[in-house]
Image 1 (cartoon, rainbow over the protein chains, first blue to last red):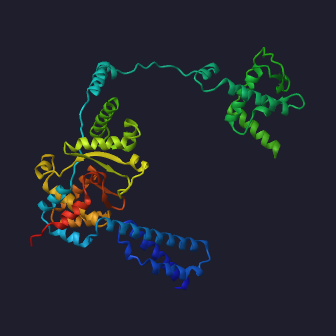
Image 2 (cartoon, helix red, strand yellow; image 1 turned 120 degrees about the vertical axis):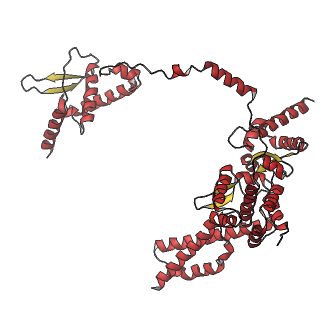
Image 3 (cartoon, each protein chain N blue to C red; image 1 turned 90 degrees about the horizontal axis):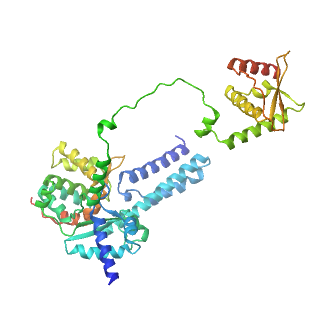
Length: 265
Length: 187
């Protein structure tokens, strides 16, 4: 083994020795801290890599913990006027159970406490009992009414606090600004504007576009020959007078996306 | 006169707080006492101690740290737990009346004295080994687990045993060691 490897193994040994003293409650004076520090000093010039230096720092930290444990150990020994643990163990082995019980009784001052119901708690309990419905009422099955699936209107979404008016208006205004930017020639292809990276985002945008149109911030222009739909930004607040159903199916979205990709490549 | 009446009221309240068990474990935290008795709660507690003394009771303060501070700070007192304890030692008959068997008392004495002599921390296996010399193996593990459940001992993930909160509140470990070392051994 090279000298460097021997030194690293020595560091690891110091760390594990210190950790076993710390975790297992062994006598910290079993470790000759001075000697171990000399070892660390001897090997310090050898370390170049950051990992080696970190290991050296860890060993140093563990040794400082051992010094603290030695201090605590001395304080405890002074406080209990030092009794040799081996002597205590020998004494415990020799004493009869009845004698040991007497030792404990002499040093035992049990806690005194009361566990009883106060008149206030009793009153609370009576009140609770009086207002508690019978079990048969509490266990009664809730009646279930079958309802067919339906659609949720915007006013319901507002009522259930899924959407706030301010939030919706903010999004519409943001979309109106984008439409004006994109429609430099006065109008923009509806599908170019609505179709996004994902189907969900596209549906969301189509939803807001519908609101934009109904608020008079945009209008639709239909070309009956080419069947193309254009979106034109407006500034006025004239609400739409007619409605145009446009289905945004997943297949349609996919087709538009692939067409856009083809154009892009 | 009004001040005296107020003091008596506060002492009565302190006794109720200290004796009446509101949580799963008995005792009151210092901050709870301050909240109920006011900022000079330490003085009220001292006055309560004098009243309880006549009944053979005492107030024991158990601090969070293992070593009892010689001059506790306000923060240490607020985090400490205050208990009412018996002022004098109880007799073997009294202990038996409250459900303690002599074997259990002896086992607790051995476990605590051994832990204390080993600076407050010892592997459970060592305590078990020591107890098995005098008690049946099946009883040792079961009784140690019961001591842990009742708060007399504590065990960590490394299976090390420590003194529990209840032993710190109820048992004078230095006196226990003195008792053990002072007993004459019949050979």
